[in-house]
Amino acid sequence: MSERRAGWLFIAPALLLLVVFFLLPVALGLVLAVTDFDIYALGDPSAVRFVGAENFRQMVKNPLFFRALVNTCYFVGVGGTLSILLSLLAALALASPLCRWRGFFRTVYFAPVVLTMVAVAVVFRTLYHPDFGLLNRFLKLFGVEPIFWLGDPAWAMPAIILLALWKNFGYNMVIFLAGLSTIPPTLYEAASLDGASRWQQFWHITLPGLRPTLVFVLITTLIGYFQLFAEPYVMTGGGGPVNATLSLVLHMYKEGFRWWNMGYAAAVAVVLFALILLVTAPLRWYQRRWSP
Image (tube, rainbow, N blue to C red; front, side):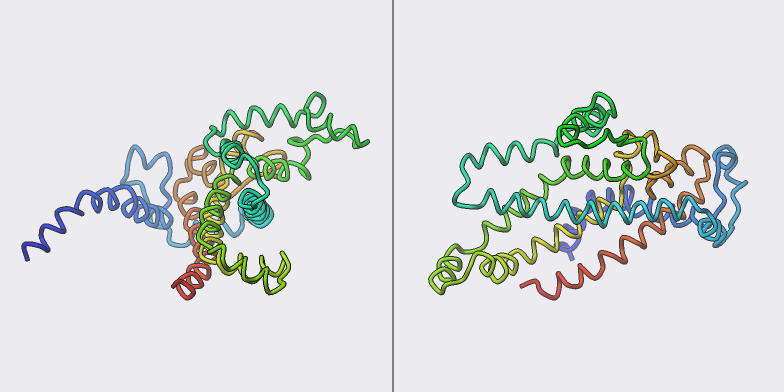
């Protein structure tokens, strides 16, 4: 009993932080989702009413919610996939025996991860300028007419995805490099002696060896990309043009902190949590099944 009591005392500070900053906010969010908590309830908590599933019914009837849902899924599907592929290609290139100055390239590719989003947004807004931006000037060399990147609904989300790719792919690249370092080089040597091509080595050695790393990267990337907020908030002024870059988190932020519909915003958070759980749960099951 004394050893058990000592163990609980050692982990008590960490458990206290977990309860106060994670479990308690989650529980309060679930409670808010079934109430009409708004700005008036801040001054008089007794004005809060239990409304049940009314917030979720309003959400289903709100076209902005579905627009934010479609935009978020588009960002996750296209941006997340491209980010993982780009990270894997960069890691394979840096792990190649033909690569020189690996430390330099690792630093260069990882540097955008540690930059602040505001600084990156200012640079990219300049690059995206329809008249003076370097991106349009480069495209003009190939006869492409200037594109209003952040003002055209058809190009605003691709512009956000391009920014997110440049900003975030270095993090997954480092993780893939760590995963590649665990694959024994003797496997490639034996495959080369047996006449296996580069593609066969990649398909039968590299991918199976990277399976745990790839699942981890998939889960973390999906969770991060579903929480799209800072990029459209800074780049397009909060989801413009005509809500082409409105995300679920941005929609939740507007409803909760601009219009003070805290109950509705908490309901959006519950739906986002359920969506992330629905997407990542099969990956977690696959990871546990194939883990050694």
